[in-house]
Amino acid sequence: MMAGMAELERGQIVQRITIAMYELFKQGYRTGGRTPPGYACGEKKCTLVVDEAAAVHIREIFQLFSDGMRPSEIATHMAQKYKTTPTVKGRKEEAMGGGAYSENYVRQILQNPVYAGYVCWWSAEKGLELNDGLHEALVDRAAWERTQEKLARQKRCQISHIRMRGSHLLKKYLFCSCGAMMTTSFAGKRRKDGTHYQYYVCSAKNKFHAQSACRTRIGKKIIESVIFSALGFIAAKNIDRRRLKQGGDEYPERIAEEKKGLLAESGRNNALLQNLIDELAEFEGNAVMKEALRARASKLSDEIERLSMRLREIETEQTLLGCDKTVGQSQINAIFQDFDALQEHLEDSERSEILRHAVKKLVLVLRNESEGKRDFMLAVIFTPEYASLGHLEVLFSVDNSRGYSQWHIYAPFDLKCKGGGNGNMSSSDAKGRPIKHHWLHQIMKWRKKMRCEDISIRTMADKMRVKKTTLGRKIKLLDDLSHEAVAFILSLRHASQIEKVSFKKLKVISLHPDDKQIRLLKNLMQTAP
Image 1 (cartoon, rainbow, N blue to C red):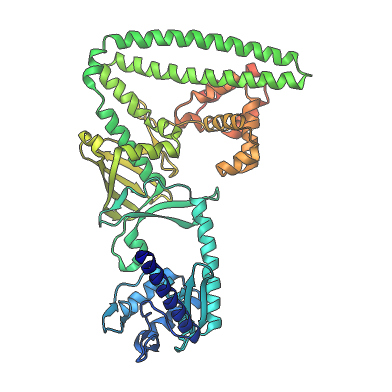
Image 2: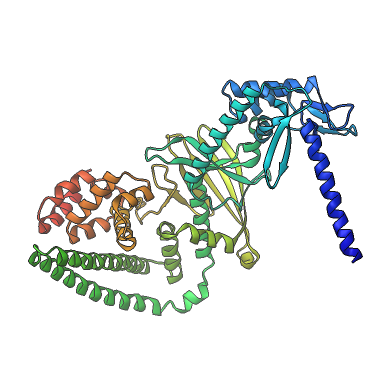
């Protein structure tokens, strides 16, 4: 009973104090909190008086914002002019403030209603309440209201940009050499497809801007491609070579047997596909049967493409086995060279899982910068579960001098990205020619996804952020080409060949009969570039 009475008394004390403080708020007194910059504690409790030395900073911040400067620009300007923020003394003469200007500090100043002559009260039932204060306002209330409206518009715009940016896989793992975490940002200028250029930047630089000497910044696609390339290298490097050597004598026979089975299965599928094409001609007037046969033909076509890709891999392995290389080396090289294809098929959720299990921390060091070219060092620290992999340091360069980004890893392995600054890596064949995929690969994936998820071309175009008309034309072209022509185009691996097979040329080829399309494509490959 005594404990219950004591609890009741404590609740009543809290209630009486809250009521008394709310009455002070109604009379215009401040009910708590730190003294805001630009003011000092008055002789009477819960009152404020203007600190003219600090009030100059506050008035200038509001004036600069009304003139059109952004909070980040205001922070840079104030730091260059005044060096530090104004110092504020509390009631007990303790000094506060005097730190570096930052964007967040400026935003807090602009949003504080105290400078418009208000006092604040917050409750869970009513939220934030404002009342006329007894202190002198530093900013006109109409100007303060306009400031809040402008900040609200900027916030809505910023939220919409954040939603458009997509996921940033490295946000929890990537750190700058100065010790600060790398945060995410994006450029205001858009690409031709309407997307923003996304990048990682040092959080100290992002917060203090010109006051920070750190210049570490890198594109999102570039650093993610470099990191997953490094993970692919370390995975290939640490394959159990002893196990590969033990199975070395059996491996050539095993892949030869697999190739024989794949050829037989591919032949059967090609025969079935030809029968379906013949049946399509018979059911020309029946739309239902025609659509069903088209679906079966598309499924068979995808299966034939998968078998063709595996056959090409086996032929590459057999070519390497014919050279003076061990089976272990050939398998490791095949794994590493195909890691770019693996990256294209990984979803963001799968990439996130790989990082969560294998990577503890990533440290990015800017080693050199000159005339659009930058040299980086990336240190990969693995989780305790993968601590046996050791410590990996990747040296790479980024070249922006040509108007787009190209990266090149030169240690501990050699790898270059594709042209055009898309941040993806590219392998090379035995003659050093760059390997590239035709855009029909991507269109076939999108068409298959549309059929599986039963979505329209417009929905798919919005999802992939491409033009609906462009996607529709390419899908129509894919349907007009024969199976043999599509298979031939998908087998092309070099940029010099793919450049010859443009959309316009394929459109002309698709107007010819199916048996003539493959001959036209082969003749096109034999022509000079």
